Length: 181
Image 1 (tube, rainbow, N blue to C red):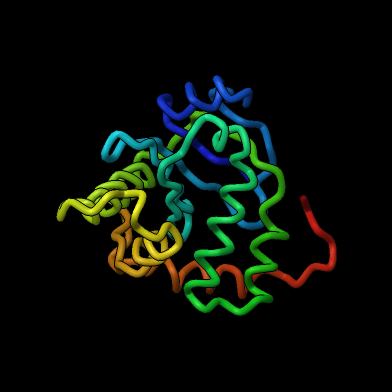
Image 2 (cartoon, one colour):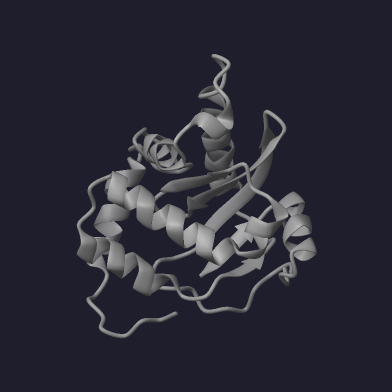
């Protein structure tokens, strides 16, 4: 699974030992590509991932270099736990896991998805405007709430509801007994 990252996040990934070329030659995973950015909220690093097609978003808060080194584990955990919070059936969550494949990164970004990513980061930050510490917020609930809001996409009249769109995408994936990891 390819994650298109900002140059700022690419620098952090390079420090953590990941190779981040300008463009990846990897074949897209059945789940599709994602975009990610790193931001600082209340002096804590947060990485926000947004799925290109559905705009489904997960946010890792209070991220350290140690966690960046294990990003595949943390992204998988956040994705599955967020889907559990949204009452996705276990079979759909398993489809998502099977479709992910190995993570790869590049800096080839879509401006449209980056715009959505920026709005999701603003939404994440808004949960701290009342003085709540970012680390006191439930990360799975945060990601769920980011997916339970409409998103506009350049060139589309209808807005997307990320939670619904991801569920539809997963339902359309073929069942597989083979784990792609």
